[in-house]
Image (cartoon, rainbow, N blue to C red):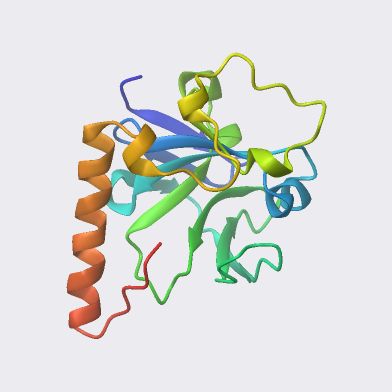
Length: 178
């Protein structure tokens, strides 16, 4: 699963490149993701923002407040202004600073290169969705417990994101926890 990876919107106005494999890929079965995608789940790849390069176009930032999430934090969806496809999102930002991007795997040119590592909010998944081909450690009724299912490299990368957020918070530039 080595990089680079490329992707973009349906109309081609927005293109992006990802320089490395993701921190983690989750399949979220929460009712908010079901509503937002009009499907049974969303597949998300977590990336440090500095590992994503916008190669063409400018995204439109749409702030939405997910009513169904326990945190109630805002989510910023980055859409193509022309075809309206969501390519990535930011959670709790811009207050948290632009340190993490959650890329919608379906917008990759080759989404099969990013298989799901973990299923989250399986407690609200559609009854017809079967998760039998996944290790039980990779399926969570609610959100994942990273120390139980993430690789050491993924934990280290996420720790560095947290360090950047803490440093930004100390300087007065946000730093809300993801």
